Length: 169
Image (cartoon, rainbow, N blue to C red):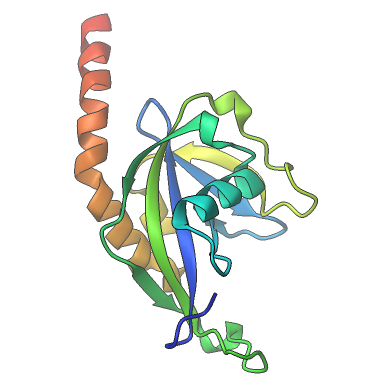
């Protein structure tokens, strides 16, 4: 679905594990890493898109995660001119995204080949701010906005884990 300004409506997914690390996926056949994301179909609700994309890209279902937060605002980025397909109607000039923060319940359920055409061919857990410096430049500001919005939530989630870690040593 493309809005009146030429932005494809999309959800972005930040998947966090019990240690406060983030899922970071490598796009198939590329040296490009990113969070899971995907377009909203006509008449599809945000949560439906979230779970469809999560299953298609990471192999997880709603039973494998907990929704912790949703971004307050839509964040958008423009595609570089070389990536804009000017022959399509309506023309898409970029993406407008609503972001979700999810906690994974069982990381052994991650399955990158859950669909015929996988989005990712590798993945790893990374520190919270790592993606901001690794994502392709045109997505960087959107990543900064989403990570900044969720940072206070993630820090409170990590607090009990960090306290337990200190007690164990």
